[in-house]
Image (tube, rainbow, N blue to C red; front, top):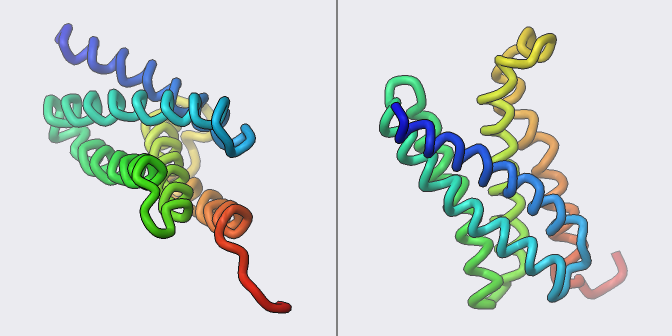
Length: 157
C-alpha cells in the first residue's frame, strides 16, 4: 500500500530527527539559541511522528495497536513540556523537563521495541527488557536534571 509506505518513511525520518534534535537540546546550554531551536525542531518533528503513528496504527490495527497508545501518551508528554515553557505557568520548568524527557523516553522505547527484533544478538534478549530499559535509565535522569535546574531549596541539608 503506497499511502502506508509514505507515512512510514515520514515517520522514520521525523523520528530520526526527534532522536537527534533531542540530543542536541539536552546537550546544549539551557538558554535561547541552540536549546530553543533544537527544542522547536524536536516538538514539530514529534507532531509528525505522532500523526504518522496514529495513521499507521489504525491502518494495521491488529499488528500495531500498541503504537496508537504509545503515540498518544508520548505526544501528550511532549505537548505538556512544550506548553509549559511557552505559557510559563507556576512550576513550568519542572513540567517542561518532565514532559520533554518523558517523551524522549517514549520515542527511544518505541524505536527499540520496533527495531530490536531485526538486530542479531539483541533479538535473542527478551523484548520486555527493551520496553522497560529506557524508563529505568531515563527516570533517574529526569530527577537529576529536575534537581539541577529546579528551584533551589533553602537551608543546610
